Length: 485
Image 1 (cartoon, rainbow, N blue to C red):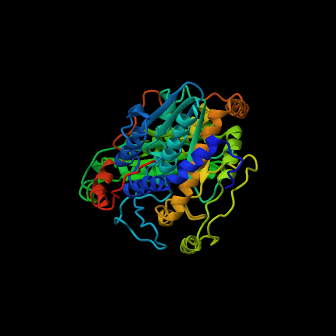
Image 2: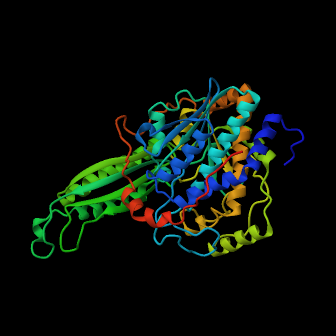
Image 3: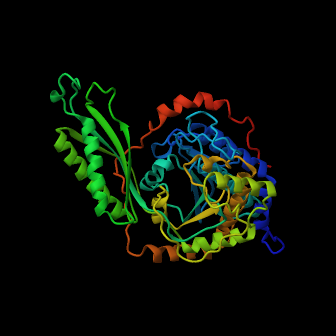
């Protein structure tokens, strides 16, 4: 990274993050070993909020009814710059870091298999670096740092937007781990609606009097069959997938209650709503055929993610300044060995920043930050904390997340994030351009939350599973605390 021509504010934040690389790594590693599922990120949120509070941020906890959600604020006046990210793990993905074969930390336990632990490290560290620059150089504006629980279930940020937490925000920045240094603009992720379908019937002995029962599990099975037939008529970029949450208690007792959890995706909010409405009709038909009743509870509903061209240009400038970390031969060898084990292209770690080429292609996954991206201009900082090509939500996706690869990538991400914030605080024209390009990008689309106005967060989601594993997982918590100097 060439620093000779950098503005002093930019040199300051880059130097600050580099000097505090150990603290950056400590946050990421701590959240990795917490391994907390969505809505139960108690230790992760505690570490993040206490670290920000210690640095002088004013922290509001429990926002929008999320016990592990928060908003940390520093400064006052315009521009108001929001940073937001996720820090939840996934079930049954407890993978030992630094291993190139599947190896549990806690057998069958939850764990990070994508890199949200590094997302947390980048956001907190980048925010602290920007705050220190504001103090040292008299930069005016407001930083708002949002912790977003339950991203893997697409939950929290639509509530934040609905409840007004982004009403005064000028621009927003989201950081996310990947295999390269990159940013994009355009539509990037799909919209989604996620819901529980609970069938209720009447129990009976399955062998002596099955004719007396109304089988709730039959309702779930017939809904599955109906959705399978509907897939023939879905548009190519629509998706529907499910997991049975409750199928009864024992084979000789016909279940009076059964629940299936479906997620419906499409490129647009209206498309996702359309697939969901068809799913409701199929569920109602299944209930009619089985003489059961159906209850439908929306778990989450998110708009597609779009990222802003004006902000992408500012982020790209910082990505180019920071550059890709210098990887060692051992790090490259580890990456290639892991790629071979995961049966993906063994190309090692990326060595160049990905250029900003133009509007990106939209992909099928979703992220609950989509609602933010239709409320205000939003940019995404992509940083190389994981091994390229390895699949997420798979053991290989967790193998590098507390190694020097993750540490170096997180430092690069925090520098990029902090540098972008400094640019936006220092140059009002950049914020103005972000707003102008945002207005052109959304056109006449009017954002309205897909979640109902009176819906409450599912605060008990994953509680039972997390309580089962938290005790054995505590044995692996790291003792060090992040100290920024």
